[in-house]
Length: 249
Length: 185
Image 1 (cartoon, chains in turn brown, purple):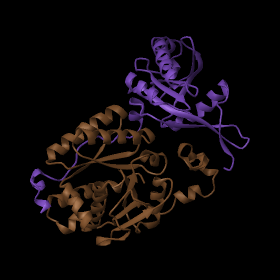
Image 2 (cartoon, rainbow over the protein chains, first blue to last red; image 1 turned 120 degrees about the horizontal axis):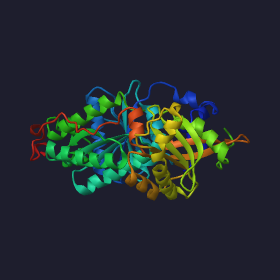
Image 3 (cartoon, each protein chain N blue to C red; image 1 turned 135 degrees about the horizontal axis):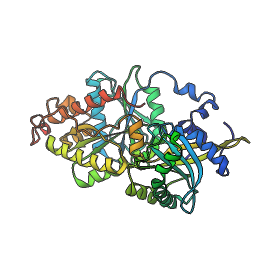
Image 4 (cartoon, rainbow over the protein chains, first blue to last red; image 1 turned 60 degrees about the vertical axis):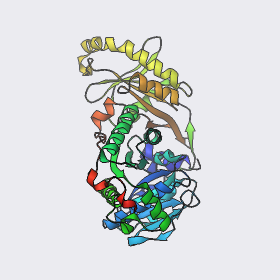
C-alpha cells in the first residue's frame, strides 16, 4: 500500500493524531455525507445500474443523489456530470479507491447531503475499511453462488473493520419471501463466522429493467415509475437514507 | 511524525507495562490482577479482569507464532480455570467471578487465516484476537498499537453497543412486485 504508516496511526491510538498537525483539524470540518460503498467487478453493469438508479430514487426522496465511481472501465455506462433530478456522477482517481472516494465525496457532496454511493473495485474492497470507509452495501442474488460471494465479502470487510456496517440488498428476487429467506440465510452464516450482524436493505426486482435503464440512460424511477422495479428501488433508497442519518461517516 | 517506524517488541517487563496502559483501547477497561504468571509449562503474560469480574487471560505471541499462540492460550486457560476459585479465597479483593468462563485475549504482530479459523472454531465467544505492534517516533521508545481483529464474542458485545441484528427489512409486499414482470414492458 502506498499509504504511510503515519496516515493511519490515529485510528489505533488517538494520541498519534496530536503529533501530526493538521490531521485532527481536517477530520473535524463540516458534517460529511455518509458514504456507502458497493463492490463491483469490472463491467458489472447490473450493480452500477442499481447504484445509479438508487441515487435517482434518493433524489426523488428529496436528498442529493451522488454517485462516485473510479476513472477507467470498472464502471461502464455512467456518464460523469449532472444527471436526472440533480443527481451527479463523479469519477475519481487514485491508488486507494476508498480514500479517493471519500475525498471526492467530501469535495463534491452538496451542502447538507446525507448520503453518497461509491462504486469500488471488489478486488481489495476491504482495504478501504481499514481507515476510510465504514459502510458497505452488498448486492446479492438469492442463489447460492451469489450469496457465497457476498458472505466472503462481508467477512473480508468485518475482518478489517469489525464495527463496519455491512448492508445487503437482495436483487433479482421473485418474492418478498424469497428475498427474506436469502437474507436470513446469509445473515446466519455471517453472524456465526464473524459475530457481526448484517443490515437489511430490502430487495430489488426486475434486473432487466435496471440493465435497460442504464443502456437507455433513463432511470427506472422516471421511465417506469409505477413498475415493481421502481417501487423496490424507492424502498431500498428509503432504507438507505434513514440509516445514513446515523451512519458512521 | 516524520520518523515513525515499526519497532520490535520491548523485553518482557517493559512489554507488560506498556500493555497495562494500552489494553483499555480495545474497548473496555481491564484491571490487571497478575503479571508473568507461571502457568502450564510456560508463562501467562497478564491475568486481568473486566468491570464485570470476568477474568481475561492475555498472552503475547511472536511474529509467525500466531497459530501456536492459540493452542498455548487454550492450554493456559484450561490450566488457570480450576485455580481461580483458590485465588479468590486467598485474595477476595480480586473481586473476580471464577464461575464465568475465562476470556482469552491473544496479541501478536499478525494473525494468519489458520490462526483465525482455529480461534473461531475453538471458542468463537471467548477468544479475542488483536494485532499488537510497537511504533517508535524518532529515538523515543516504541508505543503499543492494538487493533482488534476478531469480535471477541461475549466481552465486546456485553460492554459495547449491541451489533445490528440481522432483521430483513422491506416496505414491499408481494403484490408490489407483480411477479411476471410488468415493470419490464
